[in-house]
Length: 407
Image (tube, rainbow, N blue to C red; front, side, top):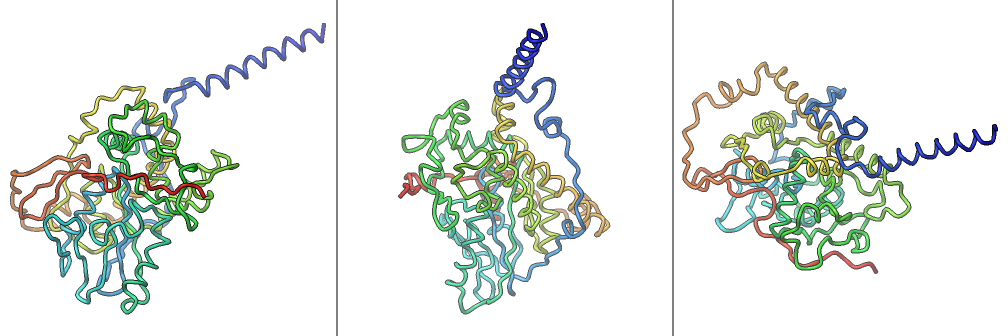
């Protein structure tokens, strides 16, 4: 009798465990068993973090004529191209960057003819197309030693970047890719070599992925759009770069997120696409450089007009958990830094723009030539040095499949 009960009990336990595992692996919603995945983010709430005064205080007051150099890490679909154009067209620096109409790169030099800005719009992709933290930190200083060998001997690099709501960023990248962008020319350089096609296969077989459906986009396991912000801000050497053979996936995710947080803390500045006024406020008080024209927030982006089902949103949340955790961390840090500056200066962000930054009200900007972009900013095409188009490449800069084959 006892033996019969033992087998019955074992069978029941087995069925319960099977149901749990089956439900776990088959759940496609942000709600499973009544429990939300990333509930704080889904509910629009921030997780509060405890940051030290060193983490919050970022008054760098750059001396561009001295040893200070700004290095801009441009993450795709974060408003990065628009912000990058602000750096070369819209900063109140002397001398200003020298820009020629129709030429993508501007000459950004100090009075002593020294490069003070490393970005796509100044020196170009010197470390590769959309170089990440791992690539930039291994490339920028050697590049300067070649081109500035008789100039500054002890340069101070101040890394900056822009972040965006991870779900909106993910949808924006899908839309951009479906219009023909590939970024196939990215080197994905780490530990002295580029990633191989075996390590990071392309998601398309032709020239690009034009017309990719959302289902196709999320079905490609090697899609670099997943958790892109985390990957591009982390030290990839900590997880053996792009060769993850034998590594535990959960452990890799944890290492990457913690590395990205650590690196972001060390950045001189980062902005949030959804917070243009606060981004400008923090930039100007941190780096000591003002924009000529204020950054503007626009809500009618391509993604805002996109018809997304709840299932699509659920999938985006589920497949970008690293970026969501990083963004929650970053946004809380960003808000606390803004509050810290407000406390130290004695005025709010709104008061800064209303009374302190420019006592005279700025002249009304002309509407002619204004275009909306996917960055949430609006820019013109007149002589007021405002910018154009949307983040990412207007035309993909590399159509050829250039990832290195495995030797």
